[in-house]
Image: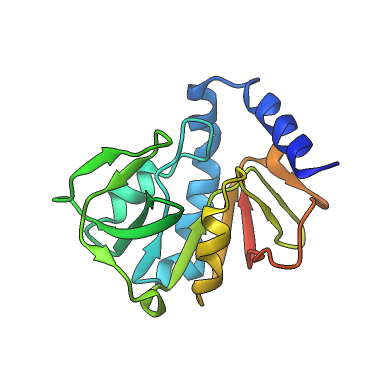
Length: 175
């Protein structure tokens, strides 16, 4: 199966659920993330503001914005910039409909303790299939912290197509 075929298959699987069902399914993965030792000890966490068909991270963002430094990606051209999100941060809807923080730009990637990463699919080896634009492919090699993929159980496979340059996750948490 090619990457494009797998993306199409995942999109069809996601369409079998309502947004409300996906939000409810997200709760188990979010609880597992909150209990994870890497999350508990992390002071600076790269998160993502979920699209309606991704594991909903709203609780993590809101619950921990005053306890940890929460970073959210912002699409700028072909790159992802990281911005601090806190209670005072303004947000905007970005080019792909993703809610982005307009908080302070964060550039010291060595200070990131944990990266929680979305994907279309993951496998048992930690391989990740993104949406195909390469934003995380360019960001992930710059991060030297644990990387945890977050997905629904139907997005987790024994093996998915990947290439040598793809950065694997250290762990995958599913619903």
